[in-house]
Length: 222
Image (cartoon, rainbow, N blue to C red):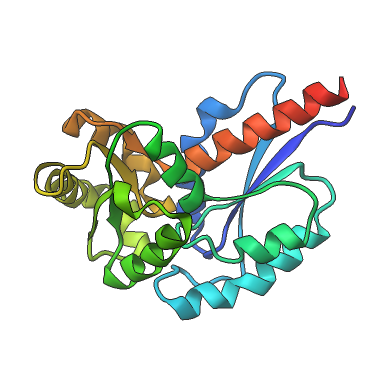
């Protein structure tokens, strides 16, 4: 049997973001388990900051997923979940979006979750998805860093993440924090230690769900 594979796609063209979340996925790369490969969408914008950026990557993502016959599951590693529905139409393999997966994981870790977003425009997009998911009653709040994707990935962003997370915890009543961008992956463990609350990295959450799906496929074929 050929090796199973999960493909994690960064829809922006910032390789540093891909490298950061790939590092955070190391603990999910199990001996004898599926390969977890991470790639950067070269034609994507440097950061997905607007609805126009989201729309720009939808068809390239669909084309990539439709043409890939080697992967057993796909993860779209952008918190706006660009192209999630159309990519699911393009393949019979499972496709996971990190916002959807991150929210579902957060709900399993606490009663009310808070989201750290990049900026106000991101929050508007995220709210549409959460209304569609029917989870607004469990949302404590979402607050912006007012940083770009690239800035959120850098070590200097950590103090700002702590500041916003404390507001979500102390003012909004969140008992679990969800990182609202794949670029924040490097900060999860340190932020969790600083807060004393569970902190969910949505890319880890989506890949964990993909891993479960692929392992079950493998068991079914054994």
